[in-house]
Length: 219
Image (cartoon, rainbow, N blue to C red; front, side, top):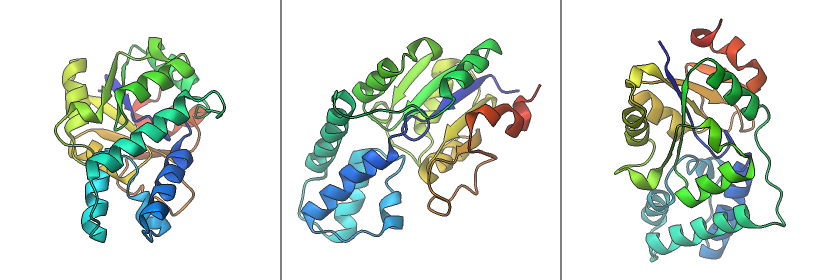
């Protein structure tokens, strides 16, 4: 029986993956890195510090992963806090949250983003009241695709992993959810063929179709 639904944030609550990707693309250009679109997608869902450690090792860069992660995190926070950039909520998130709460399900955000970014997104869209828990990847030992953040969320919510359903849009996030022993819904935010959603239990393109698509929550 599902007792809790755990949301990723970027690309699941806020339509921000393209903005995140553009920040990284600009950084790759500055570093002289040639990154394919498929390789660049591998960063989705991962803690920025862990991603930049991978990039430095892959390309043999003489750079500080900590400095690069800090620069990316700052650029993303600048985007979130800027009054000049439009921020868009993924369509239907608010209605889904209302429906989940009406059914008595617990809800959490478990994102690789900084807590400042999570709090900002909640404030932008007035969603704080819908969530029982907010958790950042910086609060656990290992980021996605490790299951740590989802297991910690279940622990803090007071539910078993098998009683949780995760909504994710990245390959790393889906792997993390399945490694945690949780059901997983892939929210199809990326263009077709860009992200491997095959390990997810369910797939939805529109949150208004969520309960129809997710059989275990029908009725």
